[in-house]
Image 1 (spheres, rainbow, N blue to C red):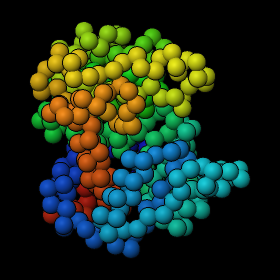
Image 2 (cartoon, helix red, strand yellow):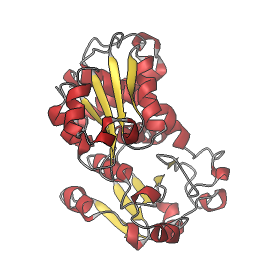
Image 3 (cartoon, rainbow, N blue to C red):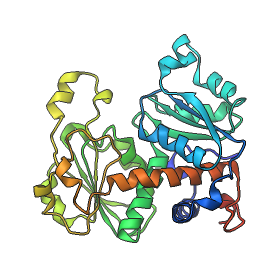
Image 4 (cartoon, rainbow, N blue to C red):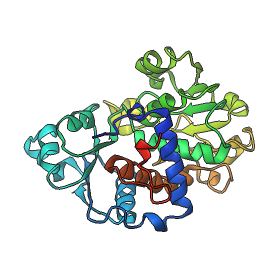
Length: 316
């Protein structure tokens, strides 16, 4: 039994196979419409979510399956003190696969140790968000035609931004990529990302606070919001909120083929006038999310692709 807890849960070849499967499903969803008939996905979301929870549910429904779950810790037995381990044991009796979001780093990993069904990490604190990473890879590959030899700028909250941590790890697997981490001093990329990913893999990266100066040299820009829910006091949040604001005027300094990604929700770091720019790719990410999560569900349940006759994780 396989789980999807971090990008490294799947090999590079397996990740590419998932991207190819998602591309096939986007191009022709009809052959996949009943592959999960009789299967159930449990969405255990201890934190608020719109895109991720609904995307997982939409993915399962499009595969012919059903969903159940909760959308807040206060709606579950966690409010009574039940542990993640016990919840995983219990829900394993109700569902065939679990998608879990939790504010504590490592909670989905712990759930996977006790669950009798596959567990998908749908975001754990500031640690990782691997399904979002696959969405980001799919979107970048669609826009740029490759995942190597790119200069990727990450801008905003890089300290708590789990999507940044996961995507950095994933893109570090490809040759020739260069990373530009753009943030205030207080929200720089964590040391553990440098120690576990950037330094061991000899990645080329720089840290700066100046978005405007870096825009002309970027192939991809990944914006993130300043995450109020991760701050211990509101004063620090208010001081840093709005430190970056990408608008159409500023975007004119970027290359014409540079996509702008964002995991959403946005607050004020991307202005509405960017939405109509062809470089805006953040709603493409939302669209791709359903197909990536369909691919992940099929892979973890060991259901063959009807177009190839092969199970995606066994076709490598």
